[in-house]
Image (cartoon, rainbow, N blue to C red; front, top):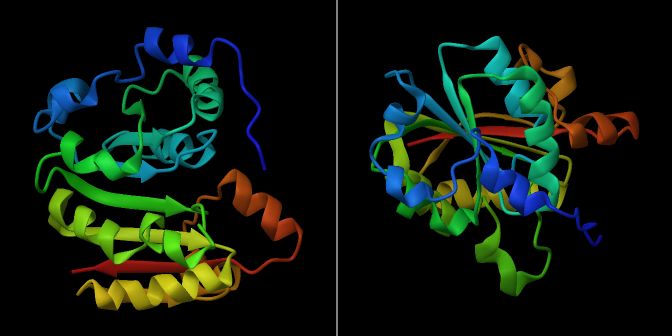
Length: 211
């Protein structure tokens, strides 16, 4: 599905106080951006921001950063942030492959991956956010006690992800093939896609991985 271009989206992001335009300059000093030493959680592929904004609203003692590579999508999250003005939330427009250039070793406490692009062709497997290549990147930026949480309705992608977690030398702490009817649903915050797919009757898969 082709994304609709939103005129002025990139300019709006560049002018906002809630977006970081040159994130590489803040590597190792993200706490200065937020003005505190609270733990930092990262969502890769934040979309229109529903998930991360609800988390930021519910957990003012945690700092949140949302990464999204498409300006036309991220600008919608920015519009909501202008209304809510959550002080513990910032956005970055970037490709996730560059996260090691942006975050120092151990700087992130938790990573959320929600309904990520499945990249269905085998030759694109390393581009999937749950590939062993990406877990190697997460290994560098996550704190020792950090974890990765992944949700999707795409069963082939989920099965692939389960295999990649172990291939990357990580361990699976929790797994469910039907999140909304499991104990893992306690405290679950739904994304835009999660609401949409659940209404269609699609079961939601979730895993939590640690080292």
